[in-house]
Length: 261
Image (tube, rainbow, N blue to C red; front, side):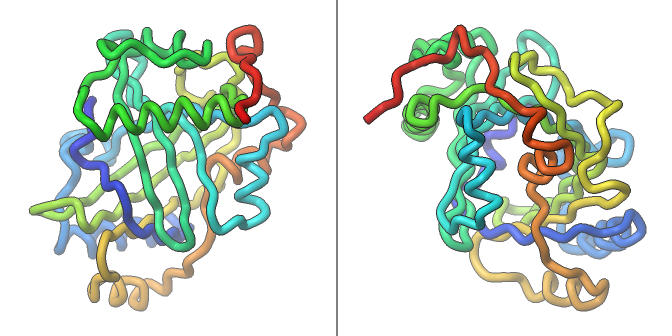
């Protein structure tokens, strides 16, 4: 599954934790304005699985930046959508700068992760696209990996139902369910264990995403269903739920590079 064409470099994201009943009403309302994402069409629940391996510093610095509410912060993760050896993985940097979300993403072949975790830049042939943006994203990911001495820390998995603009990706509504988080120090690229507790219990996470202004129909939907904006960080809330003592850096024999100046 390749979803690079759906990625926006900058957007705004508002999150709401809701009951399943409200999530279905949001879906019905949004479907009048948006169309179902092609990756969910025909699937059970109109959803597809999303898995993210989060990397962090040995002292969980990136986790604590979120806990402390730092205005300008970022996360490092490796996203994948299935366990097939031939499927690509996506190196991602997700930044929050004040109220805006900025993302950089580079699709690479799975075998390139050996170089990534060894602190080396993958060969150009490992990139699925060699145009400017993915290469810059890879370079920035590599720089931050070394700067934080980051290593695999946690696996987050969930089911995503996504509704998108009919003509572009300027407006998007996602509904994430069954969010799970588990310690993952070995980068096995497997879904978070189904035996782990769901991070948000029986609640779903609705995200309203837009690149320009807040659409009028978003405002009407928020008012109609009484949506209350709040925090819903899958990685951060997952670690908090399970306890920071359960998370330790992984692959230390591979990722042990002197901290960059």
